[in-house]
Structures are given as C-alpha cells and as structure tokens.
Image (cartoon, rainbow, N blue to C red; front, side, top):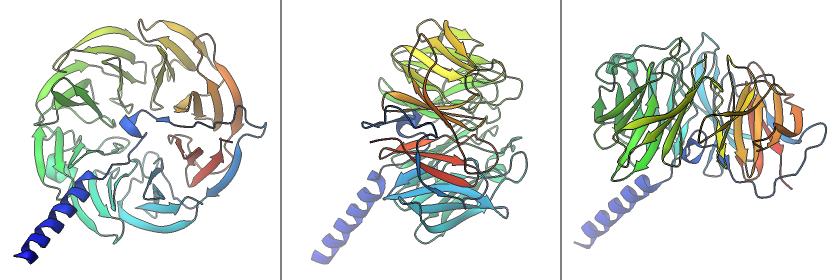
Length: 404
C-alpha cells in the first residue's frame, strides 16, 4: 500500500513538474521584446558597446537566442542539417543537437527560434517539419510533417513560425484547408484540436496569445487575413482582411489598451483593431500605409508606435490613438526594434546597432555602431538577458556589454 502511494505521489510530482515549467520563446514574454535593463549604460563609446565574446560556429540562419536552464539555445544550419547550439553564458559551446533537414533555398538557414521548456525544445524547419527534441538525449519525442499530416503547402521562403507553448498546449499554423491552425499536447504530440480557420495559407507569423473576458484567444496572420480562434477548441471567432502582394506577414500582433496593432510590409502598413470584451469580434479604429514594417517588429511606448517601414523607407513614430505620423527618419536603415529598459535598441539591415531614446518629437539616436562579426543578412531579432545584449548575425552570436 505504501509503495503504491509513493508511486502515485512521484507520478503526480513529475506530471506537475513537467507541465508547470515555463516556456522560453521568441521575443520573450508575450512576444513583446521588452527586456529589463535597470543598469543600462547611458551612452556607448564611439566604437560601440564592448564585445564580451562572440561565437562564430552557429551555421546559417536567422534564429534568435533564447535562455533557459542557465544556458543559451540558438538554431543554425550546416551541411543541410539544422542544429540547436547550446552555449554556456560565457559563450562556450556545450553541445549541438541535430533536429532535422533545414531550408537551403531563398536565403538558406534556420528560420524559427526554438521554444524551450525544461529539457525539451520545440522547433519548426523551413521545409515544414514540426519537431519536439529532448536536449539531454538528442532524441526526438515526436514530429509532424506539415505537408503529409496536415495538407500544408510550403511557403516561398520556408516556414518561419516560432512555436507558441502555453502550459500543456502547443499551437501552430500549418495553413492546410482542414488543419489551418492546430493545438497539440506538447509532451505526447497528440492533436487536441484542429481548426479550418479561413482555409488560407500560413503567412510566416508567430501567433499572439491574448487574454480576454472569459477566454483566451490566439491571433495570427494568414495569407490575406488576420484570424482569431478560441484556444479551448479552435473555433474561429473573427477574421479581418489584411492582404499584401506577397502574402508575407511575419510580425506578431501587439496588444495595447485592449486593442491589437497588426502590421505588414510591401505597402500594407498598420491597422488598429478594437477587441470587444470577450474577444469575439473586432472593429477598425484606424489604418495607415505608413510604417509598413516587413519583419522587424514594433514597440509602443507612452501612446506612440515606433518601427521601420519597408516600401515606405525609414523609421516612423505614429500616434497610437489616431495613426497620425509624428515623424519619419532615414538616419538608420530599416530593421528590428526591441526595448532594453526604457530605451530602444535598433539593429538595421545595414548592420547598424543603435541605442535610441523613445521620443515622439524626433528620432533621437543616442549611440550608433557597426556589427563587425558574422555573415549574410542582418535580420535576426536581438535579445537582452541579464543586462547583456545578444545579436545574431548569420554564423555568429555576439554578446555586448550594455550595462554598468
């Protein structure tokens, strides 16, 4: 009897431990890329922030680093295979874990940032394989082929979606007719629900989880529309048209004041949607073709939106209430924006790294430098962790000192 009780206790303990672990995923908590940095250096040297270390064997790719278990995890491709490199916080390689065949055409390399929960990593390949791998053993727990299992069509630039995990559920957007959006049990890989969504192609977007009155909803971009489903059963709550000429919508929507900011490149621009109390419907507040951000994200601070354009080149500040343009500047190349403490860090597609003060009156650049290490495109989203700035440029991960 005692043995049975002990076994039951241990089973319950392991179950709670597995399911209670926190997921570490792309652009941090709520995908907002707002990172604490209480001791931020007020101004960089002319040469830029001090390089603490750089690791130059990631392979090809655009994955950002994520941090868990006192380690750094980041994906890359070498000889057509995708690997998750695991580093210590001093930049030394602990090991590489192979996860699958990666994307070798149209800007080769890993796309998605791995989502880490305990010893498990969740990642999608550019060719459309959804994988759960045990980082300790290097073995797959389960995998899904999006084309064979869910009728997905591969995308021109490959699947780039980073996986959203919430408790025991994992969400993904295959973009098939019947399996448009799906939820899995993250441990077993069993399908919890499927949603036909709007039946359109996936659009490179990592979805947004939104808590509303009485329910949680999942909001994402499909090829021509913004779609919201109930995370309990996948029921479609609403859709809103948001097309562009190439069906490319990588930016995760932003939630602010109970409304959603959805934005895309190729001239499409931004739309602010008001969510009703239970998330079952939206109405347009305003829209603009300005700040048609391609894939660099945006930040909302004190009632103003900051981000770069695409066809509308340069950096923009828009009024959150009205969508009115407050300023536009070409002082930096288009690119990615994140927050470190109360400042912006911008990483441009020209390899510029800048510390910027949020200011609705002017594009106030405090310091600027060039990223000197790495290869290929400057597209990965930087991360701030424990007061250190991490920038991925192709095969290199660079750690910068940005705090006193």
